[in-house]
Image (cartoon, rainbow, N blue to C red; front, side, top):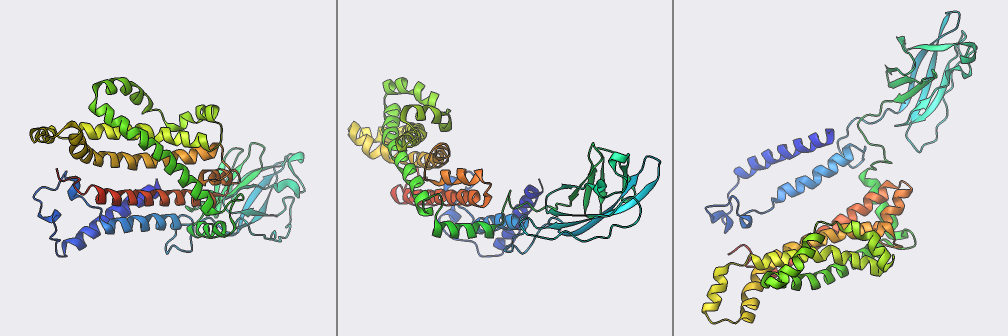
Length: 421
């Protein structure tokens, strides 16, 4: 919730600042600026470059701030590290009490430290020492060196002078102490707002891991081989899905018989997630490459079919009538009217299908694969190598975003008439 609130605050603040700055600059005089109506017109809405840059920077700043990254100029409070101490009060069976101090050395996880030296002190309760990694907690067996311990009926009744009973928690200067049901203090240092590296490593760790795996490889394959195989599977599955889906969509859009025959199948399979088909595909085609390509083919097929059908259905009938009035044949209408006007819908469907295929191939590689981005993520997660998991996610996102950019460029080049009626 804190991260979400910070992100929303950055979004609102950046929007107001950019609007204020842009209002003072000269207005653009392009085709869009000359339009009298722009609200609701998709062709008049363009991505704000400043917003895109600020959005990416904000994500990395928040990531760095909540992981203690050296790349981030700001940080939220981190976990307590250093020497902490609290006093416990032990009460013997005869009602006599004695105080002793526990000194705990809290260190960054992964470092080796020595236990602090303390004097035992006077009285039947003796001082104790312990070491503890940040973000962790530890039981303090305070009676292990006391002259009167649990076996003799002694029990802890207060922490830093505050009464405590089994199951209760008391705040101390550097964290909290909870008394277990058996009466043993459990010390937990303050964790702050930063996340432990095992859950979310800082950006520099992920960048460092990308360099290591790019040079040394992972699980007997280089990073390029892992990503290359995933990309190859996606492109091949998408190709066959489009090869079958687009003609099928045209047939359903142009023929009542084809639409009646295939619509129940398409509409039945459309809401079925591709991941639900993994067990069936494995049974039919095994865990090899053929099974993965079939799964990706099915992931793209229904999306491309519906996109092509929607494109045909969206062609303005006035254009068809105009072509007929000029003496065009059905083939000429299909080639010069229906196909050009349906291409925008097909390209939109292709972008959606490519995204679904990326998600599907990663899931398919999680089940059974020797190489691929999904396999790399799966193996890393087994050993809690979160930096590799995040690295794989980022690379998958970057490649997917790059493919989407290329498809949008191809769309602008191949169908420049999109949005112009």
